[in-house]
Length: 233
Image (cartoon, rainbow, N blue to C red; front, side):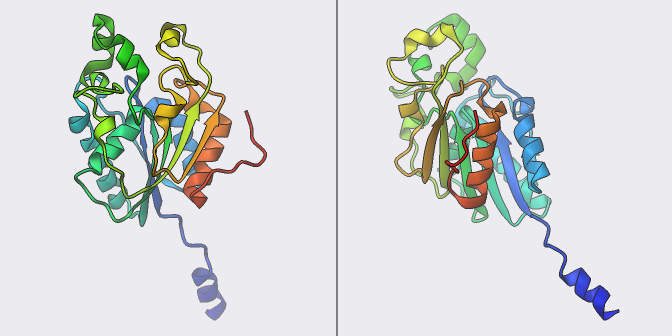
């Protein structure tokens, strides 16, 4: 009887860390499906749901962050992290301007327009851009009263940022005069308060499928820093 009890007590404690995934503008939860499966394989609880990214403004969309936090807690999480793509990172930053969550710890942002997107500057007045990007897209410029990212204050999370340096989208080529991923410049992705930062040779649209990006996501969630050894492409 005693050996059996010892065996029970010596069993590893299940991982109760929860990771909230937030996709980018015009995408769905399926764009984060590979990240989801990889994190679940590592034992994380994962919340990954679509939100109507093109039908409302950023403040309204940021409510999905609070809903997702509640879902993590309902699953019995002891700590909460985020992995975001593009607009998803801005939603987390917006949420924490007026909300707190002591159990929220780390966030990895993939291609975040933290200082806005030059694409919005170039095309926000075009009818097709307004149709595709919706109200939130209009709020992602690098300047102007309508831009939300440039007005956000630091948030109480450890932040790791991964920016892309490749682009397969010729449509927005002339929106940039500096390194970029086709939607966001490397410079715009950065934040003064970030804990770690790195670039990868991936484009904005597909970076979340990259094996190297996923490896770095796992490293930051685990250790609070990226792993620069044995890089994969």
